[in-house]
Length: 218
Image (cartoon, rainbow, N blue to C red; front, side, top):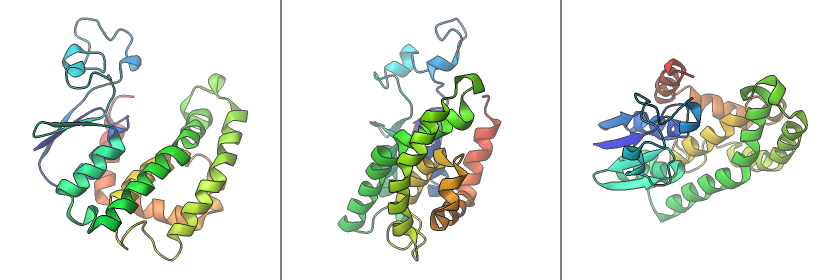
C-alpha cells in the first residue's frame, strides 16, 4: 500500500486522480499548506507543511509526497510517472519509447504550460478581485498560444498523447492545462484540446477526486 501526503487543493490532486485510476490499495494523509493557516504552529493546528512530523518526511516542506514501501518521492509529476510504471498497468509505458514520450510530455507541460496557466487561474478567478493583474493574465494567455498549438497538433486525430490510449501522460498534462480553463478563448480556438480535456475529466476516477476536492474546506 502506498501513501500520498497532501490535500486535494494542491498538486496532490494529480496523484490522487492517478491513484483512483489504478484502484490499488492506497492511503491518503491530508497535509495542508502552512500558508493557508492563520497560525500553523498553534496548538491543535492541523498537520501542515511546517509540522515537524511532516518535515521529517519531506525536509523541503512541500506537498505532495509519496511513500511506497519506504521509497519517498517528491514532485507530483515524477510521483505519477513512477506510480504508473509500478502500479498502473496500461496507464504506464509499454516500452522505453512510450516511457520517454510520457516523460517528455510531462516535462513539457511543467516548463512550457504551467508557469503561464497558473497565472491565468490566479488573475482571472482565484485571487480576490482587488489583487488580480489583468495585464499579467493577458500576457499569460498570449504566452500559451504557442504551447496550445503544439498540443492541439498532437491531439488532432489521436485523442490521447501516447500509445493511442489514456495514460499518465494525459493525467499529467490535463491537470496542468486545467489551470488555463478560465481563458475560454484558448479552448474555443483549439477544439481538440477542449474535447480531450472534457474526455479526461469525464473519467470516473477524476470525478471521484474532484468531488472530494470540492468537499474539502477551502
